Length: 319
Image (cartoon, rainbow, N blue to C red; front, side):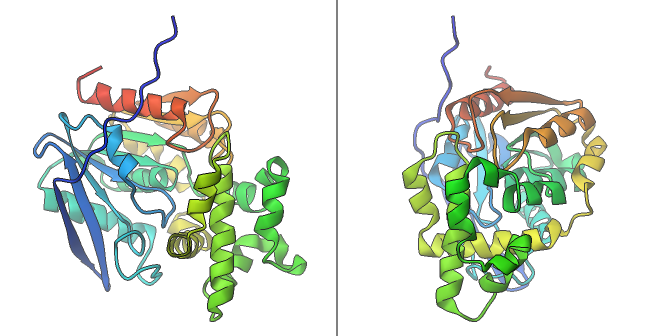
């Protein structure tokens, strides 16, 4: 008998919200859901620049978890919007520590997917004594190979129709360096060109993160305010290689020794090839790799969501 797939817990509203001044002119929005004083966990959203959304609250049993979610610098409800100054991986790692201190816990579970997995690994390798468990999905380690696969040659072969729309704003003579070509326009002085490029950049991602493309999702990724923050911040991080040394997060996976965890990855994840999740599992034996066969990248894919909810239940002592 096939086990029934687990899905989201019921919709839930925060029991507390706030804005935290993290310095450098940035103030970040945070919210807490579940049961105050229960098992603490921090949720790290994707992008970078994606912001939080209500479904992300629902991967945790609200009776057993005290979940902190926050909009990373420059996106969602955090201000200033789409701002790139003092917005790096290491600024975000420091912000997570500020939030932990604000919550008042010695250790907490870290949960992150896609770019959130990158940030989760960077934070956990920097502060391993602060991590009780680590759940990551859609592993992205931000190497040149991963960036080239998604923005230069690789996924382009799987989605030629969508790729044509992605490259359309860029003149042919600049297409050998798509990330940099977009960077010039996303940080340029022409607002109309900036918005058009932001929409094209964001919708390329919205069109390729699910095994079965979701037309509403593609449309949502193209919404003006969302697209500007998502594209500008993501591109800013990617032209800078996330301020990581090449291969750093896999090289330093040994720093996660003793931290129990789960790695969830779709077999047909286009933005984030399975190879890197496989390599992470080799360097972090305490991280149990769950390959979901009929799935792409998104948290909302049934098989991905099933494994994530099972993992959060297990670490709460429920499974």
